[in-house]
Every structure is written in C-alpha cells, then in structure tokens.
Image (tube, rainbow, N blue to C red; front, side):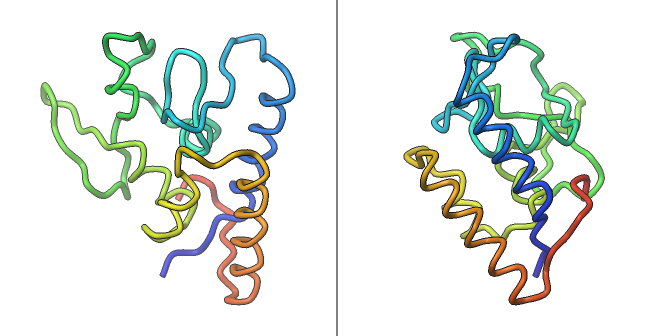
Length: 142
C-alpha cells in the first residue's frame, strides 16, 4: 500500500484555498471539474503542478481541453502510453501516485462535485488514516 503524502495533501489544499479566496495573477484558479483547463485545475491538477509536473500542452484551449489532462511521463508512472513517440501519462494516474493514494481514495478526492468544505474534510480524514497506519510520506516527487 502506498504512503499517503501528507505534506503534498496539505500544500495542495492550501493552494486551492488561496486561489479560491482570490483570483490569482496568472488567472489559474480552482475548478474541481477539470484536471487542467483555461481557468483552473482540480485537486489533482494542482498537486501535479505543485510538484513540477510537465503538462503535455502548455496552453489548454476549448479545442484541446481534453488533452489538458495529459503529462510527460516520469519514472514511477503507471499506465504510460505513447503519442508521436512521446511517453505520456494521464493526470489521474500521476496525481494518485504522487499523493500516495489508492484508486478508491483518489476517486473520492478528485470527484468533480467536491466543494472546498468536502475537500478539507477528505484531507483531514486522509491525514488521520495515514497517522493511524503510519503511512505518511514526505517526498512529493515519489
């Protein structure tokens, strides 16, 4: 079972709370319905961005919005696929790995209907579970 990356959970939630409270200078806010789109990112998208994930597309537009959920693959990524000779990975797979979650935990945390109150509670619950199980990771890159 993976180690829950508590520091990254906390950092991601803090970033979302910040961008939800004010419009950031770069225009990227929080949008729980999109991994990464023109206006924001969900919990998974922010976790990936905060750890230096390299998105396949630098700019997401309405025409390529679905492709905004794809990154260049890194060592340790699962479910890697190839496009035009490039190793790529989906945002869900990457975020699940770097946050140290299992598939069920990730599905709940990344759900598009989660509001900020729900995200706060889920992060709190995951931190408590990690403490009980002694599974608190600290390296947000792995």
